[in-house]
Amino acid sequence: MKKINFIFLILLFLSSCIQEEPKNPEADILSFLVPEWNINYGENYFSGLTGNDLDISVFAAQTSITNTKIVPQITITPGATITPSPTVEQDFKEPITYTVTSENGKTIRRYTFSVIYRLQAEYDFEHWETNQTANKGYETPVEYIDGTKQTIWDSGNPGVAIYMNGNAADFPTHSTTVMTAEGQYAAELITKQGPGNILGIQYIPIVSGSLFIGKLIPLNALNNPLTATQFGTTYTFSEMPERLTGYYYYRPGTGDYIYVNPNDKFSSLSDPNKKDMCSLYAILYETDNDYKFTLDGTNITSDPSIVSMAVLPDELRKGSPGTGLYAFDIPFELKVDPSTVDLENKHYKIAIVFAASYDGDKYAGTPGSRLVVDNVKLIIQPNLKK
Amino acid sequence: MKTTYPIILFIACWMTIPYMKAQEQSSEKREYHLLVGLNIGGTTPIPLPREIRKINSYQPGLQPVLALRATHWLGSYPGWGITSGLYIDYKGFEEESEVKYWYTNLQVGEGEAAGTYSGTFSGKNKSKVKNGYFTIPLMASYRPFDGWTFHLGGYFSWMHTSKFEGTASDGYIRNGGPNGSKTIIESATFDFSDKEKDIDAGLLAAADWNFYRRLSLTCQLNYGLIPVFPSDFKGVSYSMYNIYFTIGFSYKL
Image 1: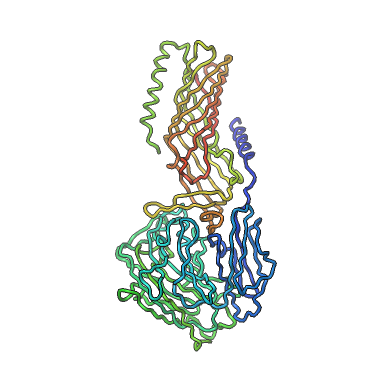
Image 2 (image 1 turned 60 degrees about the vertical axis):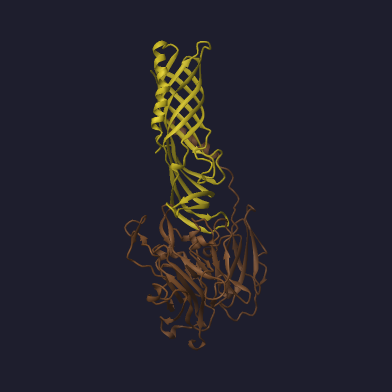
């Protein structure tokens, strides 16, 4: 009896010590919608952004927008404030910046929205941006078209940054000046040793360098890593993609092939005989009216929504011929009945995917596997229009 | 598991022997008590930080205390004495709380490629703490009248076993802080057992009520003054102290 009273007293004591709730330090845009333009960016998308100055490319599916003035639908963190007011019409001919201040006043995030009508189809990997978070200076390539930035690429780096500190070159995906096709920079993807046990949730023996059109959403990266890679962005062309061309260099790592032990989630096995391969492909797939439907690591190469694919042949995925960058030219192959394709009225997304280890999304590969890509182009042919 | 047993045992013997010898000479002036009891309390930041929103459950667990206490009564000051001895005591509890924007810095992974997560966590936290100590008290004792003895002083402890582990669940982390990317945490585990300090020291206040022959009821407040984690440990961004009540019976030898 005495003990129970004691516990009660302690609980009472502790409860009475609960202080006033801290003011919300978060300053997030939670959604950005323009239904008229089929623009629908939700909480999942925004949850993946890091830093205070955020450039966001939103794709307008309609190619024939004449009036660029609109009132977007924006929601933000409860208690936070936003300027300019989202209820005021803005002309999205130019990028528009919204500033969100957290309830506690300590976090200020600036979101700059650029509405994109035409996707850049030529990727020279000359422009790289460095993540601004201290000690997590990973790089991501950005594209420009008519001076407007397009933030269409992402990599596994934001996932690695959950646990790793380092400079750009420490992260699996980064720019390189050592080997380039044209210009000063190319993209370099290296498979690295992983940290192992992540807080008893995941076991990550290796991390593959990866680069893809789409967005890495770390929201579910620990529970369901394959869904973190959200592949593809709005396909803005009214003609089919014909070929994927560019330059690549690939050498698998020389050590053991390492993979998660299928019988024990928290250990890895190694195979000295298995050779790593790279991933290099482009996929056009059909999405819904809101462009919400997105392929991820679970279905990117197998989903029935896939319309057309350009995949580097097996032999070339084991290693690039020659000693330097090798020019590739892969035709797209139609996966569906051509009569079902309607680029004018249906909605499509395009994804281009590079990885230094083809099973890197399952944390399998050989540390040291190295893929360099540069001057990649989507060749879009009017004569293939359906 | 700490490996300070031999040192502790040596010190314990060294401390006890003079008392034992003295007892033979003058049993009037010395009293020996064997204390058996339980510790109830918490290893806690004081005050509770704002980030702790709610305590869903608290269990003191079984935290035994076994102690040999010796009191030397001073002839020149009637009723006053000095108490010391040796305690083997456990301090621990289990709790589940809800936290918001809790800042933490955790080692992730192992070996060469191990990294660190730093950022905020909002969600549920469960902690299981059970630390075992060898404790040497030093207290001034006062017996104003028969049946009641009061003690006030301090203690010094060496840890012999440590456990400080738990889970973070049903929430999310933000990498780097409020402007970082969000990641859902269904259930993650942490183990800070080997990060704890090997020593502790603090204040003691105790009362013995001699209610039956050689038996006394003993209550003791142990108020730790040294944070259980070193200052360079950032897993918990607050200083946490051992605050425990001992309740037990002492038997006069």
